[in-house]
Length: 126
Image 1 (cartoon, rainbow, N blue to C red):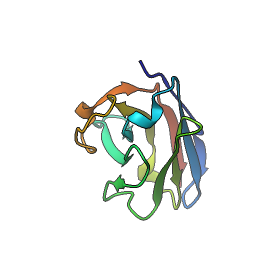
Image 2: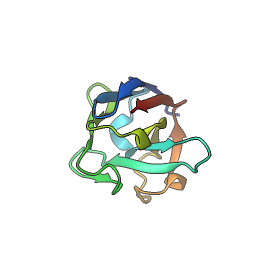
Image 3: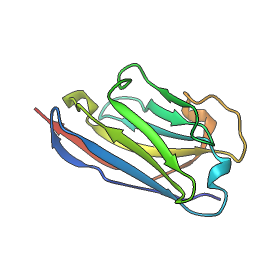
Image 4: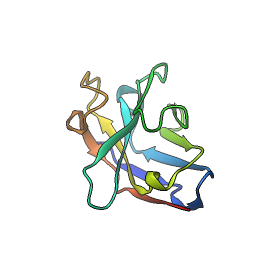
């Protein structure tokens, strides 16, 4: 079992930055592909970013590519999402997710992820 706890959300003006963190329990963090998803009110949950087990490969949605950066520190059991140049449309609850141990599911679909955090609210004001 992997438990995930997000932090770092909040209220920020458009153009600002936030860094989300997701701390994972256990000793198997490096075995899991990690991802960030978000869900805005009235919308379906959508893929934001993902990272390979080693951190050597990263993947982004078109809407955040070039503005957001995902990274991980396997020694600290933590994955991060640095969000720059935030837009009002980035407002959502952001979820951290982990695939199963050594899973090779798609990075982009939420069905590939078996462990989820509780979410952290990000609100971008105009």
